[in-house]
Length: 337
Ligand SMILES: *Cc1c(COP(=O)(O)O)cnc(C)c1O
Image (cartoon, rainbow, N blue to C red; front, side):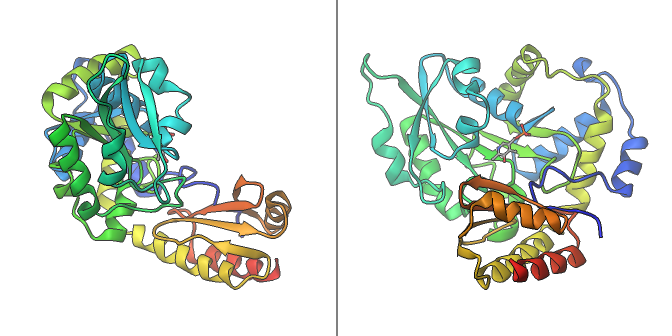
């Protein structure tokens, strides 16, 4: 059996069908706006989420950073959970790219509420940075794939609207959230000023994210993308993978979620595991009696790769390159830990 790679859902390789779509893509110079496959991807993604326009970027970091730049001015402050990818894993880009400070909140598994956000919005006073943006993440990566329903998002969106704040969604795994909650992508647009969608996570494209917003914002976003060096040329070959992923790899995310439940149950029954955090989507966080490094070595001896997120905590992430027989293998190995 080949290695089972549970480190991340970014490790997937293009399927034959996806490669076929990439080979046959019609391309042009996207900096001139002439790559018809990129244009088609941007329009398709925007329509899917009920947004006006989209911009294809090399990474989710770039789509998030562009959104933050579009929705703030230097000296502003944004509000996010302390686990937020935009804060923790984007290299300090909020301060560097946008000159903006970050107010961090402590949501439950990274999930914020309007009641948590409201007192953190600064009053108009020259001492305080101007609060201009709230960033939500769905699903929450460091929250173990926890997700918001639209019902939970609605009061936050209302608060932002009342207080004149912009609302951005880091939707790196938004389709996992939609799969788990049953919410509709098309209903998302009305709540957010910006939505970032990763094609290279569970959807299985090799590269790429799309930022969705209104036309004015996307026009400015093209300027920022250029500044960041993200203006690509015949990148329609990559966008073709994204279109293929949207057409073929959303429906199957429920398989990853089912696999995650199977593994979570096996872990819960293991004497080597002290705690399995609630599993809502394709991510499992669990705590081990032995140091995580020791457990990872045992797993590696059985050709299972995973990552630790703390001294006694390990993360498994399911994705389209983890097949049922591999899940069975992992279940068997967990029983021997
Ligand atoms: C992966 C990820 C991103 C984007 O990461 P890139 O590697 O830059 O594409 C953004 N937000 C979250 C929550 C992620 O998990």
